Image 1 (tube, one colour):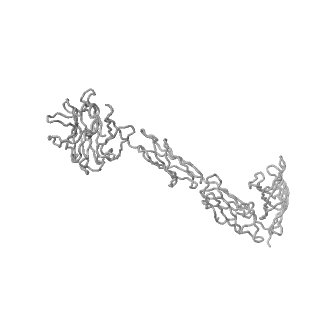
Image 2 (cartoon, helix red, strand yellow):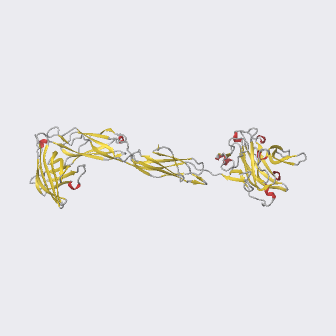
Image 3 (spheres, one colour):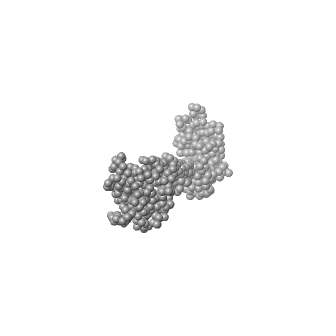
Length: 580
């Protein structure tokens, strides 16, 4: 479609049959990509009023082949005639070269269809197709571009009825190719559900000054013959990527919305490829009719902020592709840290008055079960703190060594402690890195049997309640600790009794003794305890007592756990290390 023209003749006037309404041009050049002896240019005209017979109106098409502003050929619609000039009902197109004084030469049948082959309804209509041989105009494969203009007249009316100004068409580079690869006029059966092949080139479309497609319905009723299909560029789209969050090794949902989801009478269709930090997530996901695409993603990146990219590829030519990014925030997965069964709980010094070591402690790390196991071999760094429960200084641990691990498997970290002084230590392992989080601890006692025994008793006030304490612990010649430690807290609801006759170890550091062992709490066994007994000299009123109690599951019993409290009565005796 190359142009339209408003009505300038009243619709009631017969001369409206030459009043131009729309003009189009096409060619079958693209069927062969060359100008051959049969290649044609097709001009289509539609008028505001109908004619009875095509010879009622004359369309004069002037061709400027070299586009220098001077017409080189004239093409008209006409009909065969007898020797007396009487016209027959066989309608054709004819041409002649400039200066337009010579007779016309027959070129083609009107509508490019032989009268006996197909009825294209040339009578009582307002449209026709005027073919001309391309080579007869001097067009070549290398130079198929030309200018043209149209002047119309109507039989019985003097002078020009309408004009169509100069336009340009390049048969070798059309904006629309409608041939479907078949030579001849692009003619198709006009049936419901039928389709017409269209190849579109935007640059050529603009260069030719095209406006769309002029579709001619030969067998429609008057008023429904010519149809203009305007050309619309595909619409740009925008992808919005929803922010997402997740935990390493767990599933989260990635979501992208492509807009607009509708354009003209079209509904969006296509696929979105998601990626995280440039790595594709599964296969492309189809957008729904609202332009939304979602996919499940099992997080395989570490904690922190990551980039989600969504690339939309359209499968509907009315929509252009696009892409955008969003943010995925990842948290660490939880891991249980447990101590290996082979870990020692109490270690005797290598020699009286000395230190212990090497002592190897191992910790097992397992992902907390949630149905989506991750790869525990990603745990490559841990921190191990060895801190005295009582007085004293922390002990440096060596670098951890790792073994095991994998998807859903146990990862083990081991550290070796050297030159560990006498004391009771909290040994805590904390997982580092971006994939897992968790910590676990073990109590390690380093003791020296040569330091003697601890004895005494007294009472303190804890949480407003009076408590009574007794201590009598010594080391046997075998190197094992033996003794008892009762603690009775007199509460309004009744006494709480913590009693131990199963001493595991006792470390003596300076004026402080730290016994550990198993205890019975109000008749229930398998509790653990660590006591701190501090001898601040005679007569004992500055001595102190502290306690930590854990239940059979290893959980601290908060109301039986406290830092050392000064005795309100009593005395403790802790032996002092003397030189030997």
